[in-house]
Image 1: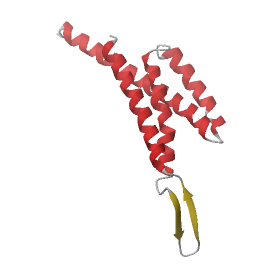
Image 2: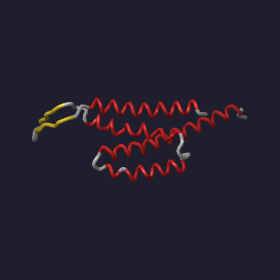
Image 3: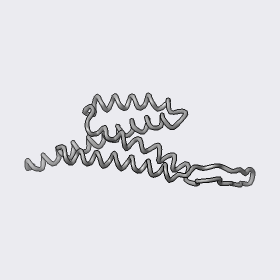
Image 4: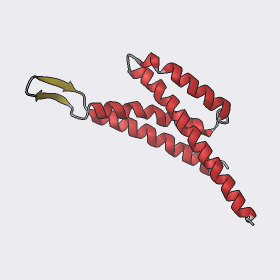
Length: 134
């Protein structure tokens, strides 16, 4: 027979996993909204953000501390841009057997710094909210 403490621990673990899951759903919302601001095809991501937000608000406990995932999600597009621009800054020339050319790249470090800062800030705020508001 399980001890009452064990059942409490199992319940706490389920709550934690549920909140973490909704944190990542909100991170998806934040990522889609951020992409809509930095991309010319960003308007395609707004309906996805809306659906995810409605689902999270309806079934994820409403506007809870899981919404701090918005902050972490906003950092994801910045990391994508940093990855795409990883050869920069400056002009990089290339040559294959059939073609050659040069491409201009941005400095990826500011994009990387912003992306990491947003992801860490959102995760830290969520951890702090979970730790001190039980």
